[in-house]
Length: 161
Image 1 (cartoon, rainbow, N blue to C red):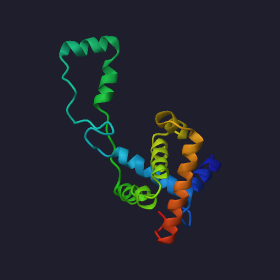
Image 2: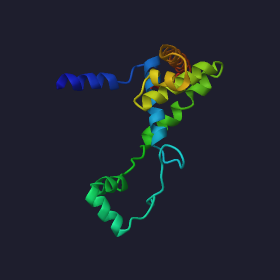
Image 3: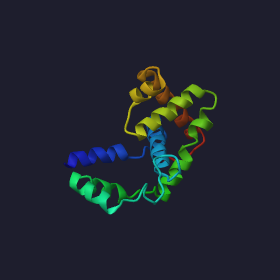
Image 4: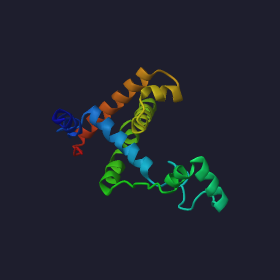
């Protein structure tokens, strides 16, 4: 058990300077934070009002069919909002592909698509299935873009977070 904790601490450790994998991780976290925001029409955000009202007979029928508990769980679901620290990190990282990869739209697209896939707990194969091409190509372009961003962040002396 102690070994698992030590491995997690090593994975979560902030490196002394920017490198490609750490940039990729920050972009993935930025995408994950962006998805947590309550944006109407996006990311599954819904108003507080229920989709429809239940009559007493509906509730009885649901209870008899075993659906009442599932309906109540859906109605009592709470959406967690990102913290101020997460929002600040997202605002810093979300624009990196646009700023640092402006000359190569293909690499910028790969960086964003693979980061989004990782935020959704998917891989480059998922991106290839959605967008076409090969997973290895998407992954290679993503890694190349993250390395370019890391180099630029080091040159500009941006603090590692």
